[in-house]
Image 1 (spheres, helix red, strand yellow):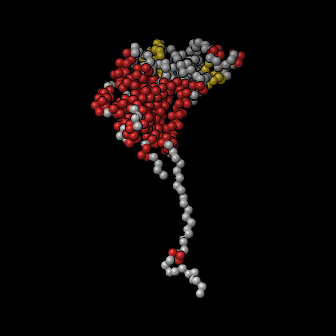
Image 2 (tube, one colour):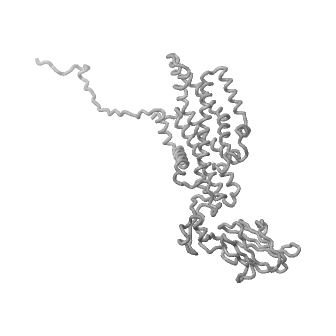
Length: 460
């Protein structure tokens, strides 16, 4: 009888192995260092990334800008004083000035009017004799004039009812002036008043054009030709200096103080806070009480004292006293932050392991503790820079920082606020750069704080 090959019931041979193909997906994530992961997180923060580009642009504006725009920031263009951006630079070539005797054919004998085309050479006015007038006052204003507003600068008082003409040659510039004629009787009571708006045009003579470099020679120009004055993309200030060149050179001063001073006093704070946190005990308490004492010292008072100590008088630049005052007085906040980090890190296991292996205090601080506080230190620096820039701008604005003619954004704001109603560009541009710089560093610091926080690192 043949042997049966059928497996016995319940034996393992009765079970057929179940073969199922299973795809194993390995979730792989590239290995990133702490700084690489921080850079990835920073790039994902749109505001911080835009702020970083703004900061790089400001540095390029400061370093590369003067190499491209080579205009001397202290050079004065007397033909273009307080000119806004985009102002007309054209000048018509005319004959040299000739004295005027007041003779002209009156077109409308009932009102104050122009006797000739008004130019920066002269503005010639004529008017009819007012009944009962014994004298006339002529005023000039750069703002519109009404019955309740000031008439402006008094130019001259003319006596005699027959004197009905006047020629103005006092510091004329291409702009609109408002001339006011006031007729007075014998007792000084006004009997007539009217105002005329005059749009003054720029003209030059052939000799002036050649002397100012607007033409190579006199043979190249004819009367009624048009020449163009020097280009100032952002206009000029009240002394005719190029605003773009002054902003570029002023950025060097503002950013030098805004970056160099925080680096110095943050370094002092890091060293002081690291030593206090590592030593601990009564020494730590004594060092922190001294830091509290420094915080209580008034910055402005010490700024004045340092200016006296350095022998810097009125009108002289106070950059060095400002730098010293910042380094001496502004380090405690950084030392507190670093001390707190050191107190936390020194209790970590790897610090204890390093101690057991014989690591010295200096090695522990420099090799383990400070590198692990670099995130806090960098964020502190980025927040300290806008504060230092604003401090420099404030001190220069009140006349205790950078002194003219050296430009800085703060001193330029101080100059521009005097004429902000008539020429606002002199204040707007430096104030705008200060605002952009402070905002960019603040947003960058906020983004770096998020990027360098180990608790917010991606775990995907």
